[in-house]
Amino acid sequence: MPENKHISFSEPLEALAPISLEEMDGIKLMNRIDTKYLTDESTLLRILADAAAAGYRVLVTEDMRISPYDSVYYDTAGLRMFCDHHNRRLVRQKVRTRSYVNSGDTFLEIKRKNNKGRTKKKRLRIPSDELMDFRADTVACTYLAGHSWFSAPDLSPVLETLFHRITLVNPALTERLTIDTQLCFKNFRTGKGTTLQDAVIIELKQDGRADSRMKNILLDLRVKPVRVSKYCIAVTLTDPQAKSGRFKEKVRYIEKTIGKKLVTI
Image (cartoon, rainbow, N blue to C red):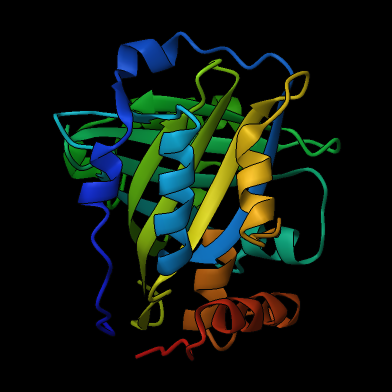
């Protein structure tokens, strides 16, 4: 996998007051709007400083303010889910397993986007050793069949995604911010791997009825909204046979943002 030196965020994160997972679970965003942003690690330092000054809190789990995630995305032999996204199909799904590395908790997750742009996620806890392949688990397969139009025999593992996540919450508890860094990808079907180097993907989840200080912080730092899917970018970079013309523009945008060429090996 290509190597890249990363900035440490441990010190700036200490300036933010903590919030527990139990407190986070109590936050209900009834009229939620999700917006993604793309930036680099140097700009993230400034975002965190401004967030601390604005009273944002950072999620702490297992005494850690940065949480490593390990996800495996599943798709059909013809990459139906990838192609649905590429072809701008409004109603679409993604199926993945995800491990929260600090705690070891592992889930089968089904994400469905409707024709109004809203995303709903269903998940089932599974044994940690099923992260790489859940298809021998009859309970998980039944759950998939009940919440997806795909069945387990249709799917196989395509891509592993590893990253580190920081989660912030505003003082009014009306928005959450997930910040993903050190993104690495491995394609099981092609054997190719890559990283997004020092690119940072931010997702702002806010109550549509409330003002957002974070939006102003990002605007002041010239961090603009962008539609980006980790899975789709990863397949574009690691599978030369995939129909990915529309996503290549996103790859160029990432390269422009970080000032570096993304390398696949």
